[in-house]
Length: 350
Ligand code: DAH
Image (cartoon, rainbow, N blue to C red; front, side, top):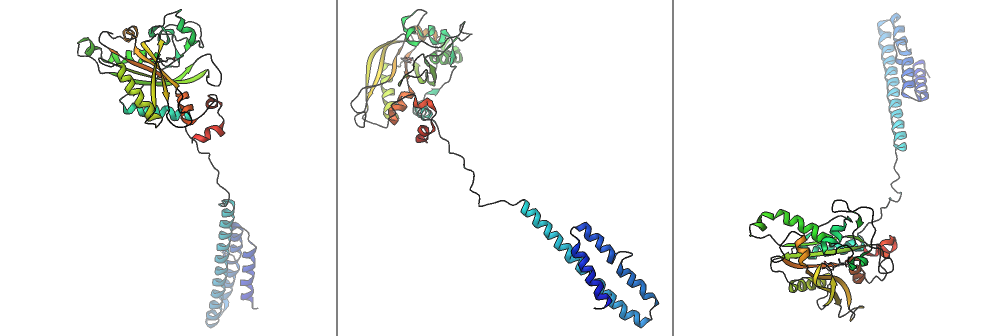
Protein backbone atom coordinates (compact mmCIF):
# COMPACT_ATOMS: atom_id res chain seq x y z
CA UNK A 1 0.00 0.00 0.00
CA UNK A 2 1.46 3.36 -0.95
CA UNK A 3 1.57 6.37 1.32
CA UNK A 4 -1.64 7.92 -0.14
CA UNK A 5 -3.71 4.77 0.10
CA UNK A 6 -2.50 4.39 3.68
CA UNK A 7 -3.68 7.92 4.39
CA UNK A 8 -7.15 7.15 3.03
CA UNK A 9 -7.24 3.94 5.05
CA UNK A 10 -6.18 5.87 8.18
CA UNK A 11 -8.92 8.43 7.60
CA UNK A 12 -11.56 5.69 7.22
CA UNK A 13 -10.48 4.17 10.51
CA UNK A 14 -10.44 7.49 12.33
CA UNK A 15 -13.90 8.34 10.99
CA UNK A 16 -15.21 4.90 11.93
CA UNK A 17 -13.99 5.38 15.48
CA UNK A 18 -15.82 8.68 15.82
CA UNK A 19 -18.99 7.77 17.70
CA UNK A 20 -20.67 11.16 17.52
CA UNK A 21 -20.95 13.98 14.97
CA UNK A 22 -18.69 16.14 17.18
CA UNK A 23 -15.99 13.47 17.29
CA UNK A 24 -16.28 13.09 13.54
CA UNK A 25 -15.67 16.83 13.01
CA UNK A 26 -12.49 16.55 15.11
CA UNK A 27 -11.31 13.60 13.02
CA UNK A 28 -12.09 15.52 9.84
CA UNK A 29 -9.80 18.38 10.97
CA UNK A 30 -6.88 15.94 11.24
CA UNK A 31 -7.16 15.09 7.54
CA UNK A 32 -8.91 17.93 5.74
CA UNK A 33 -8.27 20.84 8.12
CA UNK A 34 -5.93 23.80 7.58
CA UNK A 35 -3.04 21.96 9.14
CA UNK A 36 -4.35 18.52 8.28
CA UNK A 37 -2.60 15.72 6.43
CA UNK A 38 -3.93 16.60 2.97
CA UNK A 39 -2.89 20.23 3.34
CA UNK A 40 0.57 19.02 4.34
CA UNK A 41 0.75 16.95 1.15
CA UNK A 42 -0.19 19.97 -0.95
CA UNK A 43 2.48 22.06 0.72
CA UNK A 44 4.99 19.30 -0.04
CA UNK A 45 4.45 19.79 -3.79
CA UNK A 46 6.13 23.21 -3.87
CA UNK A 47 9.55 21.73 -4.54
CA UNK A 48 8.44 19.47 -7.46
CA UNK A 49 8.91 20.06 -11.20
CA UNK A 50 5.91 20.96 -13.36
CA UNK A 51 5.49 17.41 -14.67
CA UNK A 52 5.83 15.89 -11.23
CA UNK A 53 3.31 18.41 -9.93
CA UNK A 54 0.77 17.20 -12.48
CA UNK A 55 0.89 13.55 -11.51
CA UNK A 56 1.42 14.17 -7.80
CA UNK A 57 -1.37 16.78 -7.77
CA UNK A 58 -3.81 14.41 -9.46
CA UNK A 59 -2.94 11.66 -6.99
CA UNK A 60 -3.39 13.96 -3.99
CA UNK A 61 -6.71 15.17 -5.40
CA UNK A 62 -7.93 11.59 -5.68
CA UNK A 63 -6.83 10.99 -2.11
CA UNK A 64 -8.68 14.07 -0.94
CA UNK A 65 -11.84 12.99 -2.76
CA UNK A 66 -11.59 9.53 -1.22
CA UNK A 67 -11.23 11.03 2.29
CA UNK A 68 -14.17 13.36 1.64
CA UNK A 69 -16.30 10.45 0.43
CA UNK A 70 -15.41 8.47 3.57
CA UNK A 71 -16.38 11.48 5.69
CA UNK A 72 -19.75 11.89 3.98
CA UNK A 73 -20.48 8.18 4.32
CA UNK A 74 -19.68 8.26 8.04
CA UNK A 75 -21.76 11.40 8.54
CA UNK A 76 -24.73 9.67 6.96
CA UNK A 77 -24.19 6.51 8.98
CA UNK A 78 -24.10 8.51 12.22
CA UNK A 79 -27.24 10.43 11.29
CA UNK A 80 -29.08 7.21 10.47
CA UNK A 81 -27.96 5.61 13.72
CA UNK A 82 -29.27 8.60 15.64
CA UNK A 83 -32.62 8.46 13.82
CA UNK A 84 -32.83 4.76 14.56
CA UNK A 85 -32.29 5.37 18.25
CA UNK A 86 -34.93 8.08 18.30
CA UNK A 87 -37.45 5.88 16.49
CA UNK A 88 -36.83 3.05 18.93
CA UNK A 89 -37.25 5.35 21.89
CA UNK A 90 -40.55 6.70 20.54
CA UNK A 91 -41.83 3.37 19.28
CA UNK A 92 -45.50 2.49 19.82
CA UNK A 93 -46.50 -1.11 20.22
CA UNK A 94 -49.46 -1.15 17.90
CA UNK A 95 -50.14 -4.77 18.80
CA UNK A 96 -51.09 -3.88 22.42
CA UNK A 97 -54.81 -4.40 22.99
CA UNK A 98 -56.70 -1.06 23.06
CA UNK A 99 -58.01 0.47 26.26
CA UNK A 100 -61.72 -0.10 26.34
CA UNK A 101 -64.31 2.25 27.73
CA UNK A 102 -67.49 0.64 28.94
CA UNK A 103 -70.48 1.77 26.97
CA UNK A 104 -72.88 3.74 29.13
CA UNK A 105 -76.62 3.85 28.95
CA UNK A 106 -79.62 5.58 30.46
CA UNK A 107 -81.09 4.39 33.74
CA UNK A 108 -84.36 2.49 33.24
CA UNK A 109 -86.31 5.17 35.11
CA UNK A 110 -84.70 7.84 32.91
CA UNK A 111 -85.83 5.85 29.89
CA UNK A 112 -89.36 5.92 31.29
CA UNK A 113 -89.20 9.67 31.97
CA UNK A 114 -88.02 10.29 28.39
CA UNK A 115 -90.88 8.17 27.16
CA UNK A 116 -93.44 10.03 29.27
CA UNK A 117 -92.11 13.38 28.08
CA UNK A 118 -92.20 12.28 24.44
CA UNK A 119 -95.77 10.98 24.62
CA UNK A 120 -97.20 13.96 26.49
CA UNK A 121 -95.06 16.26 24.35
CA UNK A 122 -96.84 14.88 21.30
CA UNK A 123 -100.14 15.84 22.95
CA UNK A 124 -99.02 19.44 23.43
CA UNK A 125 -97.81 19.28 27.04
CA UNK A 126 -94.85 21.35 28.18
CA UNK A 127 -92.31 19.88 30.59
CA UNK A 128 -91.61 21.83 33.80
CA UNK A 129 -89.12 21.21 36.56
CA UNK A 130 -89.06 22.57 40.08
CA UNK A 131 -87.26 22.37 43.41
CA UNK A 132 -87.02 19.19 45.46
CA UNK A 133 -86.56 21.23 48.62
CA UNK A 134 -89.99 22.76 48.92
CA UNK A 135 -92.02 24.88 51.29
CA UNK A 136 -95.09 23.97 53.29
CA UNK A 137 -97.10 26.38 51.21
CA UNK A 138 -96.48 24.76 47.82
CA UNK A 139 -96.34 21.18 49.05
CA UNK A 140 -99.51 21.32 51.17
CA UNK A 141 -101.32 24.56 51.94
CA UNK A 142 -101.73 25.86 48.38
CA UNK A 143 -102.95 22.39 47.44
CA UNK A 144 -105.91 22.73 49.76
CA UNK A 145 -104.19 20.78 52.53
CA UNK A 146 -104.03 23.20 55.49
CA UNK A 147 -101.96 22.62 58.60
CA UNK A 148 -103.32 19.75 60.71
CA UNK A 149 -105.24 18.32 57.74
CA UNK A 150 -105.27 14.52 58.22
CA UNK A 151 -104.04 14.00 54.62
CA UNK A 152 -100.68 15.41 55.67
CA UNK A 153 -99.94 12.38 57.81
CA UNK A 154 -99.74 10.15 54.72
CA UNK A 155 -97.03 12.45 53.43
CA UNK A 156 -94.53 12.23 56.25
CA UNK A 157 -91.25 13.57 54.97
CA UNK A 158 -87.90 15.08 55.89
CA UNK A 159 -88.22 18.49 57.51
CA UNK A 160 -85.83 21.20 58.55
CA UNK A 161 -86.50 24.14 60.89
CA UNK A 162 -88.50 27.14 59.79
CA UNK A 163 -90.52 27.20 56.64
CA UNK A 164 -92.41 29.76 54.58
CA UNK A 165 -93.06 30.32 50.88
CA UNK A 166 -89.64 32.00 50.75
CA UNK A 167 -87.85 29.57 53.06
CA UNK A 168 -88.36 25.98 51.98
CA UNK A 169 -88.33 23.53 54.85
CA UNK A 170 -89.11 20.05 53.54
CA UNK A 171 -88.29 17.56 50.82
CA UNK A 172 -91.35 17.56 48.57
CA UNK A 173 -93.59 14.52 49.04
CA UNK A 174 -95.07 14.75 45.56
CA UNK A 175 -94.72 16.71 42.33
CA UNK A 176 -98.13 18.37 42.87
CA UNK A 177 -96.53 21.61 44.15
CA UNK A 178 -95.44 22.09 40.53
CA UNK A 179 -99.12 22.59 39.64
CA UNK A 180 -99.08 25.81 41.65
CA UNK A 181 -95.56 26.91 40.71
CA UNK A 182 -96.12 26.44 36.99
CA UNK A 183 -99.66 27.87 36.92
CA UNK A 184 -98.61 30.98 38.86
CA UNK A 185 -95.86 31.68 36.30
CA UNK A 186 -98.24 31.05 33.42
CA UNK A 187 -100.90 33.33 34.91
CA UNK A 188 -98.31 36.06 35.55
CA UNK A 189 -97.28 35.96 31.89
CA UNK A 190 -100.89 36.25 30.71
CA UNK A 191 -102.26 38.48 33.48
CA UNK A 192 -103.24 41.29 31.11
CA UNK A 193 -105.16 38.98 28.77
CA UNK A 194 -106.89 37.32 31.70
CA UNK A 195 -107.90 40.64 33.29
CA UNK A 196 -109.15 42.06 29.98
CA UNK A 197 -111.48 39.08 29.66
CA UNK A 198 -109.75 37.78 26.52
CA UNK A 199 -108.53 34.81 28.52
CA UNK A 200 -105.24 32.93 28.64
CA UNK A 201 -103.86 30.07 26.56
CA UNK A 202 -104.53 26.75 28.27
CA UNK A 203 -102.09 25.40 30.83
CA UNK A 204 -100.92 22.01 29.66
CA UNK A 205 -97.86 20.74 31.48
CA UNK A 206 -96.19 17.72 32.98
CA UNK A 207 -93.64 17.95 35.78
CA UNK A 208 -91.43 14.91 36.36
CA UNK A 209 -88.96 14.69 39.21
CA UNK A 210 -87.73 13.23 42.47
CA UNK A 211 -89.95 13.09 45.54
CA UNK A 212 -89.39 11.96 49.14
CA UNK A 213 -91.25 10.22 51.94
CA UNK A 214 -90.45 8.31 55.12
CA UNK A 215 -91.02 4.91 53.57
CA UNK A 216 -88.84 1.95 52.66
CA UNK A 217 -89.66 -1.58 51.48
CA UNK A 218 -89.76 -3.58 48.23
CA UNK A 219 -92.28 -1.20 46.68
CA UNK A 220 -91.39 2.04 48.53
CA UNK A 221 -88.17 3.98 48.55
CA UNK A 222 -87.45 7.15 50.61
CA UNK A 223 -86.60 8.79 47.30
CA UNK A 224 -88.81 7.97 44.35
CA UNK A 225 -90.08 9.60 41.17
CA UNK A 226 -93.37 11.15 40.26
CA UNK A 227 -94.70 12.86 37.20
CA UNK A 228 -97.40 15.45 37.62
CA UNK A 229 -99.82 16.44 34.88
CA UNK A 230 -102.00 19.52 34.70
CA UNK A 231 -104.44 20.76 32.08
CA UNK A 232 -106.41 23.92 32.84
CA UNK A 233 -108.64 25.77 30.42
CA UNK A 234 -112.18 27.04 30.11
CA UNK A 235 -113.73 23.83 28.97
CA UNK A 236 -111.53 20.96 30.09
CA UNK A 237 -113.40 18.06 31.64
CA UNK A 238 -113.00 14.62 33.16
CA UNK A 239 -113.74 13.24 29.71
CA UNK A 240 -110.50 14.86 28.47
CA UNK A 241 -108.60 13.34 31.38
CA UNK A 242 -109.93 9.90 30.50
CA UNK A 243 -109.07 10.33 26.87
CA UNK A 244 -105.56 11.71 27.46
CA UNK A 245 -104.62 9.19 30.11
CA UNK A 246 -105.97 6.20 28.19
CA UNK A 247 -104.05 7.30 25.13
CA UNK A 248 -100.92 7.77 27.23
CA UNK A 249 -101.11 4.30 28.85
CA UNK A 250 -101.79 2.50 25.59
CA UNK A 251 -98.87 4.26 23.90
CA UNK A 252 -96.54 3.84 26.85
CA UNK A 253 -97.16 0.10 27.16
CA UNK A 254 -97.61 -0.39 23.41
CA UNK A 255 -100.86 -2.17 24.12
CA UNK A 256 -103.98 -1.08 22.25
CA UNK A 257 -106.38 -3.24 24.23
CA UNK A 258 -105.18 -2.05 27.65
CA UNK A 259 -108.20 -1.10 29.81
CA UNK A 260 -108.44 1.73 32.35
CA UNK A 261 -110.56 2.01 35.47
CA UNK A 262 -111.20 5.27 37.33
CA UNK A 263 -111.80 4.30 40.96
CA UNK A 264 -113.34 7.00 43.20
CA UNK A 265 -110.83 8.25 45.74
CA UNK A 266 -109.88 11.31 47.77
CA UNK A 267 -107.19 13.91 47.36
CA UNK A 268 -107.51 17.34 49.00
CA UNK A 269 -106.50 19.13 45.78
CA UNK A 270 -109.02 17.48 43.44
CA UNK A 271 -112.77 17.11 43.53
CA UNK A 272 -113.91 14.63 42.38
CA UNK A 273 -110.83 12.42 42.66
CA UNK A 274 -109.99 9.05 41.20
CA UNK A 275 -107.24 6.49 41.30
CA UNK A 276 -106.41 5.19 37.86
CA UNK A 277 -105.94 1.43 37.47
CA UNK A 278 -104.88 -0.32 34.31
CA UNK A 279 -105.41 -3.89 33.17
CA UNK A 280 -103.47 -5.73 30.47
CA UNK A 281 -105.43 -8.18 28.34
CA UNK A 282 -102.41 -10.32 27.53
CA UNK A 283 -98.92 -10.99 28.85
CA UNK A 284 -97.73 -11.98 32.32
CA UNK A 285 -99.76 -9.27 34.10
CA UNK A 286 -103.05 -9.88 32.24
CA UNK A 287 -106.29 -9.67 34.19
CA UNK A 288 -105.04 -7.84 37.27
CA UNK A 289 -105.94 -4.26 38.11
CA UNK A 290 -102.74 -2.29 38.61
CA UNK A 291 -102.78 1.15 40.19
CA UNK A 292 -100.72 3.68 38.22
CA UNK A 293 -101.88 7.20 39.13
CA UNK A 294 -103.98 9.54 41.22
CA UNK A 295 -106.10 12.09 39.43
CA UNK A 296 -109.06 14.38 39.57
CA UNK A 297 -110.68 17.65 38.67
CA UNK A 298 -108.62 20.47 40.14
CA UNK A 299 -110.28 21.78 43.32
CA UNK A 300 -111.64 25.37 43.12
CA UNK A 301 -109.42 26.40 46.05
CA UNK A 302 -106.37 25.22 44.12
CA UNK A 303 -107.49 27.07 40.98
CA UNK A 304 -107.83 30.19 43.16
CA UNK A 305 -104.30 29.68 44.54
CA UNK A 306 -103.08 29.62 40.95
CA UNK A 307 -104.44 33.15 40.62
CA UNK A 308 -107.43 32.14 38.50
CA UNK A 309 -111.19 32.42 38.85
CA UNK A 310 -112.58 28.90 39.42
CA UNK A 311 -115.88 30.03 37.89
CA UNK A 312 -114.10 30.42 34.58
CA UNK A 313 -111.12 28.07 34.69
CA UNK A 314 -111.40 24.37 35.23
CA UNK A 315 -109.30 21.33 34.48
CA UNK A 316 -107.74 18.14 35.69
CA UNK A 317 -104.54 16.94 37.25
CA UNK A 318 -102.89 13.61 37.70
CA UNK A 319 -99.83 12.24 39.42
CA UNK A 320 -98.19 9.00 38.41
CA UNK A 321 -95.21 6.97 39.53
CA UNK A 322 -92.58 6.50 36.81
CA UNK A 323 -90.78 3.94 39.01
CA UNK A 324 -93.88 1.78 39.09
CA UNK A 325 -94.45 2.23 35.34
CA UNK A 326 -90.86 1.07 34.79
CA UNK A 327 -91.41 -2.00 36.99
CA UNK A 328 -94.54 -2.91 35.05
CA UNK A 329 -92.99 -2.31 31.66
CA UNK A 330 -89.88 -4.40 32.30
CA UNK A 331 -91.26 -6.89 34.82
CA UNK A 332 -89.06 -5.74 37.72
CA UNK A 333 -90.41 -6.84 41.10
CA UNK A 334 -88.27 -4.91 43.57
CA UNK A 335 -88.16 -1.11 43.43
CA UNK A 336 -84.89 -1.02 45.35
CA UNK A 337 -83.03 -2.48 42.36
CA UNK A 338 -83.45 0.89 40.64
CA UNK A 339 -81.50 2.70 43.35
CA UNK A 340 -78.84 0.12 44.34
CA UNK A 341 -76.61 1.06 41.41
CA UNK A 342 -75.77 -2.57 40.65
CA UNK A 343 -74.20 -2.52 37.20
CA UNK A 344 -75.34 -6.09 36.44
CA UNK A 345 -78.95 -4.96 36.80
CA UNK A 346 -78.55 -1.63 35.01
CA UNK A 347 -76.66 -3.11 32.05
CA UNK A 348 -79.77 -4.98 30.98
CA UNK A 349 -81.45 -1.75 29.92
CA UNK A 350 -78.65 -0.47 27.70
N1 DAH B 1 -99.90 13.93 44.62
C1 DAH B 1 -100.63 12.70 44.84
C2 DAH B 1 -99.82 11.74 45.65
O1 DAH B 1 -98.62 11.84 45.65
C3 DAH B 1 -100.99 12.07 43.54
C4 DAH B 1 -102.01 12.88 42.80
C5 DAH B 1 -103.34 12.62 42.96
C6 DAH B 1 -101.64 13.90 41.95
C7 DAH B 1 -104.33 13.34 42.31
C8 DAH B 1 -102.61 14.62 41.27
C9 DAH B 1 -103.94 14.33 41.45
O2 DAH B 1 -102.30 15.60 40.44
O3 DAH B 1 -104.88 15.04 40.80
O4 DAH B 1 -100.35 10.89 46.28
